[in-house]
Length: 545
Image 1 (cartoon, rainbow, N blue to C red):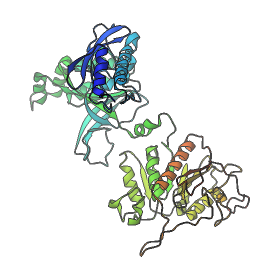
Image 2 (spheres, rainbow, N blue to C red; image 1 turned 135 degrees about the horizontal axis):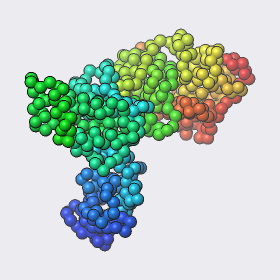
Image 3 (cartoon, helix red, strand yellow; image 1 turned 60 degrees about the horizontal axis):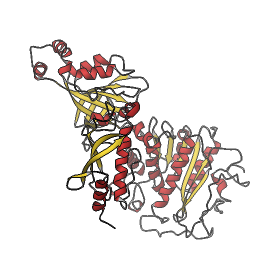
Image 4 (cartoon, helix red, strand yellow; image 1 turned 180 degrees about the vertical axis):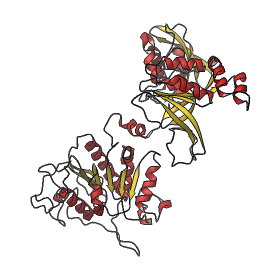
């Protein structure tokens, strides 16, 4: 294969580009709707792990006053959503594709198309120092009094509503004012803003600013507090930078009353600069909903997980990432402690040895986000049925047929319908051969958990084993420990993943097929194991068939 740098050099020179600097930086023209624009393309990596950069040098021939996707340093943001695959085995074609994408990016600003793009990437144009914003979106535009926290172990400041996160001890806490908007912040030709006067004009131009916003901004400025505008498309903010004369008055220890400074400041808003800050949305609801992109979540659902072992611990983490513990506590049940024998496949590690699993898992999950709500219950779940019966979904993650049968029996006798309380079981089959889940909603004619076996010690009706009579391999007991079923961590994680999917399908109102199987060991498991909704077993001692 020809040297890729030689190929890139020949390709760009054939297109009229000239080498400007060593290490593959070239200058030339591209066309946007037939109009020329001079650009520089830099190719830092012939494998294209780091894509080429394209910088606009001269766009005076383009018939638009503003160009979207153009950063303040002139770089064209040509890589759209989903990235841009570039073929390292076709370096010449790849750089031509980059230039074509840069042309298309400039063309999107023609015919008024820049406004929407500007608003979508507003934070990128603001270019302030970064902080995390854990203030949830609002249904009505409002003013939120907030704090900027510096937390131990996190280098980036965090913006939270005043009074929130009181369970965390910050290294510092400083007050701030947030104007929370329901609508997107709109782009204006004065953006990014250069003074407090420009900021006030910008807020006034928005379609629905919160009541009292001007007084709130001026009051915060007089106290040298930061101000943030939080909207669905961007979170931008600033701290005021006073000119020398105003700073002298503001910092004077005596002689000037606050009202006097305020009157002076109100007349010099055009002289007050802005030290910009850009917020990254970090509230719990956003963290949950971002990757689900409109799909059902578990936010607000009252869910209990019975068993914080190898399946339950991994499942609990997945449930929290899907919204459990947001707007309602996630309940965890377990009575065991973490032992050395658990470490090979449990979510927890060495530092949690000897701790109650339910408390250690709860602490681990609280690390996901300070707003997540977890309630550990170190008691026998079957003895707490009165509380469990108030849930929307109870998940048996013990993998223990005795616990599963007990919960199945209590649930069958409950007066609550399947629409009010769902029961989901998940377990590992055999020596990690498969993971299975079973969801019960008390549908007429469909099975309960005990219906899945012809008898308590009988055959599974939907066994994933090729040989239903193959013996279960047990590890021998050691002093102080019981025997156990050996299998790798992939099996409980697969079972937990199946359970999460079943829970999300249930939350979306489409529970689908109730018995789900994923076969991991194809040597011992059945390759074609379909998902089914089992019918009742006519001799079931639990539901009566």
